[in-house]
Amino acid sequence: MDVVKFYTDLGFWHVMDWAGLDHFFFIVTLAIPFTFSESKKLLWWVTLFTLGHTLSLVGNFYAAINFSSFWIELLIPITIAMSAGSLLFQKGTSFAPKSSWFFPILTVLFGVIHGLGFGRYFSMLIPEEAVGLSLFSFAIGVELAQIMIVLGVLISNLIVVRVMKFSASKWEYFIGVMILSQAFAMIFERI
Picture 1 (cartoon, rainbow, N blue to C red):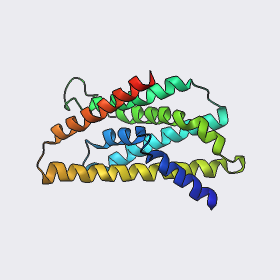
Picture 2 (picture 1 turned 45 degrees about the vertical axis):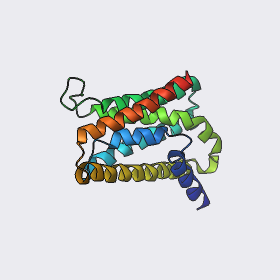
Picture 3 (picture 1 turned 120 degrees about the horizontal axis):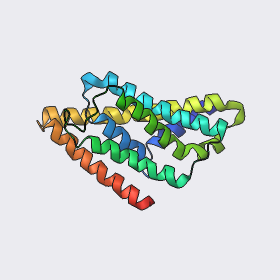
Picture 4 (picture 1 turned 90 degrees about the vertical axis):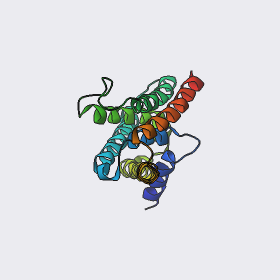
């Protein structure tokens, strides 16, 4: 039981660590266009991100995937910038993907990239006798933290758009610009 608690807590605080906001920024950009009525689709996408993140941890542990940490650390804010940039374009423009599978596949890919950033460290922490339980518990912790962020975003959307009557497209644009500026700062910091 200590293994479950330890790795669930580790997964939760991996996402909620205010010293490393990459998960937070990505989940906010993913969630900001949604409302409570669309939360089922949004939660599916968040789970796809967790799945991609977990797959890279599994791959790193079992196959000792060895990517350049420089490129992974650079790709993480690039994925955030791409997600934030998608908020700047109105739906229906030529920049918006027409396919319904585009964003789910991209979300899994971005999860893999984010997981690779933590993979080496995580593979050193896992006890060999409890690999599956550790990975599963960590994924549960990541998912719980991401659901908390999603809930916060959906409540913020409700307050800003419904109660304060702020335009949803302007709200998305505002959040997109804020996170994009942070992503660019992260990119330039890592170059």
